[in-house]
Length: 631
Image 1 (tube, rainbow, N blue to C red):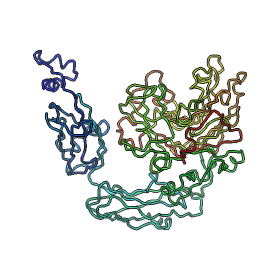
Image 2: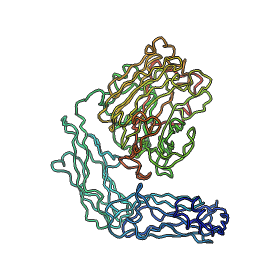
Image 3: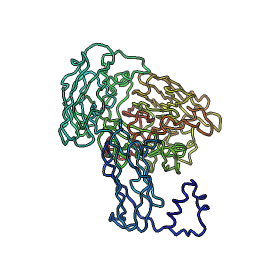
Image 4: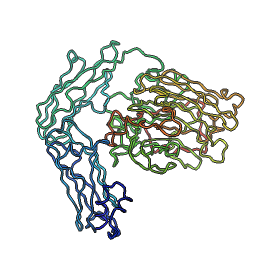
């Protein structure tokens, strides 16, 4: 067709409008026929040297039946790793364009992977584009390697940290059914064999299988406060087709006898074993199937806090989000994005949150198989929803729970937060986080009542339990805790704050807040109370205090966000500095799921407690209060 010929002739000029003026006047541009639905399917998303990438383009109607194309058209192809073109380094004769013939239902394209010269695994993105056509599967991740290598890991423990007295399972995996028996020998470091019980000397993946698990291995206790110790396991195999991905594993043996550190930085002041999960009677069977025989604590509403001092203060268990790797509890089953999105939260897709980034919790949250919530950000074009409509250059996650109103208009509403509530969040901030402000915070629900004079910020009240603004202005590892309250119009706005230097914000810390009574808020990190705020901090305007049932009869909602680019951290006014995102801009979506450089916040659990001041208005009903338990 003429229009296709025009496009080919003019595209090298780079601009379509210029291209049209450069074509002959007698070239008549015929209207495009009605576009047909296209699908790209791959024979395999995992390839090694000497294999072939097979792409099948097909045309199907709405019922899925194959139909013939009504024109000849071109499909443009790219293969990239981040911003780098890898089409020539990974493949022989990778086509930049293929033509789908008129009248055909399918087009198969085969591209050979290079037979030598590939020395590492590359997680590339294949992109297909046909002008004027919508194509399902137009972007797909493909892993290209030298071999289908054998990977050895600790099952459900990517950090490779094992506490004394705990058990772990070694797991071996290969991406395709093994072509032969894969026998791997396992050798502990010199003098380290006696630190394990039941450590196998070999593991074998049988031909045709994908993986094998060891029996539970125990990390023995030594009874001495030697501190954490690095141990080494060395692996070896003679497998011709499946060599090892890594020949060594470094395990951290966590010492249970290490004396307590500072109150600010040692979470054991709150829980003796902070990594010990809670579980409910309702979910006990599914929990034990997943967790096995490892230590855990059965909890139910009304149980005193496990910490004796906090129990003595009257704090009793209300609810928890433990993020167990159980589909339907705190996560959905794996979706089309290849992740298990979090349950129990809504998308905080407001205009303020989405100024530069689009919220999509189905794409950028994952409750991992290890049992924690991961929230992260990626540089990619994606459309915002809710209050921040339009295409953004970045995607990320932002979550809320507890937005109550009398008409039950907001969900999820699983935990009432008000006077007499203590909330603990075990979190770590990781990756290349320059320009981000990871935050755990609360806001008053009166903001949803437009006619109420306290519906404007900051009159409805905000508690920033933890903010970590990162940049040249604020540094890396500072946890800011702030309360916003008062009336800006009358000059009574106050924001009492504290800044806490945490040497290891990339490790687990417990950030907590207590709305103790109707005039007192306490905040802390691990075992240290870092800030106490009372209505007296408002001075003569103490009547503006919003942290009570009078000003917030609908209570408060809980938020987890990854605000970026942070003007606070980066120190800009209107336009973010060029290159602020250089630490993660080249990481593709697929690679971002596992990249250690991806900016992210990880949440192990969120626990809610109450004291005798806790009360919920009669007009408030929890959203399905007994139908779902998140622990």
